[in-house]
Length: 132
View 1 (cartoon, rainbow, N blue to C red):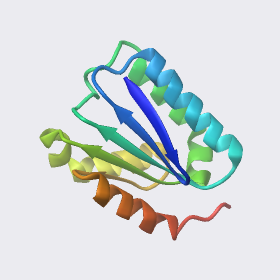
View 2: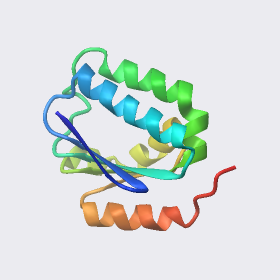
View 3: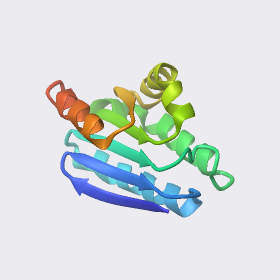
View 4: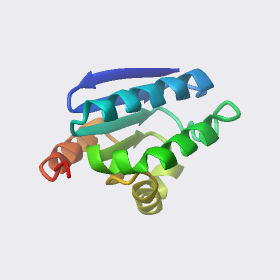
């Protein structure tokens, strides 16, 4: 289940349990809405478990294709993507995840174990936000 909350410019996506195609479509719809507004934004993704493997078939492909197609707009408007996870494995691979996420999304990405750390990082990133 996906819950979306907004505290502009930070949009929070909270994942609980298995991610479905409906969740993926909600995620994509919100990102499209943000890009259309043509204002800087940041994403705070909170996963209470490692849901990257616990996804309905097609979710990763659908999101991946959308991100690849919209990377120029994400690069332009998204000033940071912070992931908060309780997964020790995900946190262990933080350097690799940070590098791959940044390359894939086109904006700075990082992984945190607390929401407070993630928000502080996003607030710091906002000072670098410029729309080209």
